[in-house]
Length: 104
Image (cartoon, rainbow, N blue to C red; front, side, top):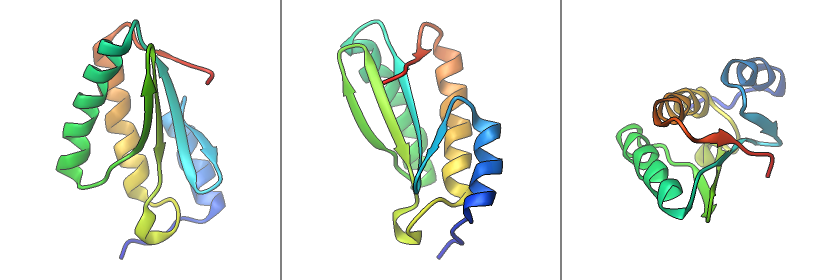
């Protein structure tokens, strides 16, 4: 099993993956997209990376938005794996263009 991070460790690491935010035992991120189809394409790209890492976000999506939550369920909180996946997701979002941070 991977080691769960302390709140202090998680606080330091989340600063390196802005605009992700710390919310309890999760890090969260919302993205605005042009429409449902763009949100779905973005989610599919994220899903391929998540599958390769065998580490999957909790997801909510709809017309023009995608909300992502990361935690390591079997560790009962945040681990380094969550922050590594967040970094990869940020690269995917940046490469897409047109996807903006949302305040949802």
